[in-house]
Amino acid sequence: MTEAIFKTENLKIAYGKNQVIHGIDWDIIEGEVTALIGPSGCGKSTFLKTLNLLVRSMSDDVKLSGSITFSGKNILNDKIDAIDLRKQIGMVFQQPNPFPKSIFENVAYGPRIHGVKKKRELQEIVEQTLIEAYLWDEVKDRLEDSALGLSGGQQQRLCIARALATKPDVLLMDEPTSALDPISTLGIEELIRKLEGQYSVILVTHQMEQAARVSDTTAFLYMGELIETNKTSQLFSNPTEKQTEDYITGKFG
Ligand SMILES: Nc1ncnc2c1ncn2[C@@H]1O[C@H](COP(=O)(O)OP(=O)(O)O)[C@@H](O)[C@H]1O
Ligand SMILES: [Mg+2]
Image (cartoon, rainbow, N blue to C red; front, side, top):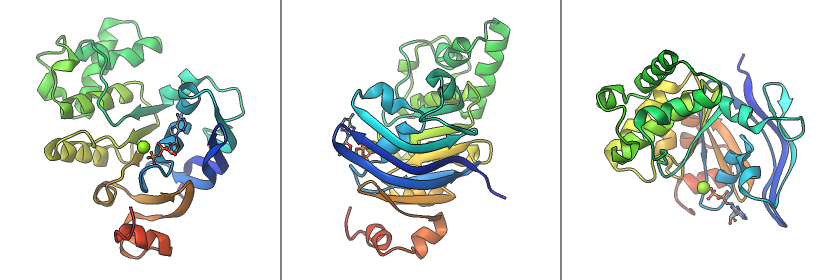
C-alpha cells in the first residue's frame, strides 16, 4: 500500500492575525511527485515552507497549529532539530540561488556541515550528485569555477544537486522554473520525472501544464483550503469539485 511521507491534520498557519492556511488534512504519498496548484496568494509557498519549518525561521509572527507527521514525529511539537530536518527535506526556490562559491563547494556544502570531512568522500558525493542532477557532463571540467558563471537552468540544476547531496527523503520545490526559459524548464521537468520513486517531490507551480506533465498527484489549494487532491490525470480530466473545474478551465486564476 501507499504510505504517507507527510500527514497533516487540521494544519493551520497564520501570520499574526492573518490566517493563511485554514485547517488542512492531507496525506502526501511517499515516492510520488505531488503538485500543489492554485492562484497566487492562496498559501502554496507558506504551506511548502512549513513542511521543513523554514517558515518559522523566516517570520517571527507565524503561528502553526494542528500536526504534521513526518518520520513518525509531529514536527510542530516534538523536539525537532531544524538543521537535521532539512537534511532529510531539501528545498529549491523560484530564483536559482547558488552560493557565490565554486560549483564543487555548492554541492559539498551540505555533506560537509553534516560531518563528511574526507576530500575523497566529498569528491565522490559531488560527482554522484551532479550525475543525478544531469549536470555532470556540463561542469566536470570546471568544478572549481564560480557557480555564478553558470546559466540560469544550470544554476537551478546545481541547486537541486545541492539539495540532493545530503540524501534527503523529500525535495520541496517552489515554482522552480518560473525564472527559467522554456528549454531550461523542460530540462528541470525531465529531471523531476527522473527523481520520482527515489524521492518524494512536492512541487508548487502555478502552471497547470507543468503539474499535468510531471506529477502523479495534484492538489488544488484555494484561499488556504485544500479543495481537491486527486490523481493528476483524474484532476485535470474529470475533477470532483466544481471549484477545481472552474480553476482548471480558466474561469478564475
Ligand atoms: N512572511 C509573511 N508575513 C506575512 N504575511 C505573509 C508572509 N508570507 C506570505 N504572507 C501572506 O500569506 C498569504 C499567502 O502567501 P503565499 O504563501 O506566498 O501564497 P502563494 O505562494 O500561493 O502565492 C498572502 O496573503 C501573503 O501576503
Ligand atoms: Mg508562492
